[in-house]
Length: 102
Image (tube, helix red, strand yellow):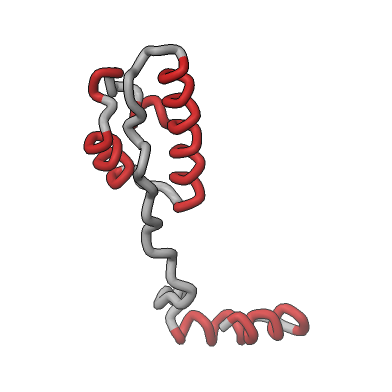
């Protein structure tokens, strides 16, 4: 999943601006993005130690998390008529569970 998104970047193009832009385009959860950045930081540290690059493109930059998914949503999978039809067709525990869910 990372290689198609980041794999085309050449070593010489690994700078703070490019990486910031790529991370802002990367569609993933905050947890996933943090994990990816951790891997990038580690790889870049190794590249500096091996004298492949001169400076760390991510030094001094921390990712600001995106807005979290809202707890409250406006998604209603059933219309009121469908809810009533399901309740009418169900019995016992199933009815109680559906009533609670709706």
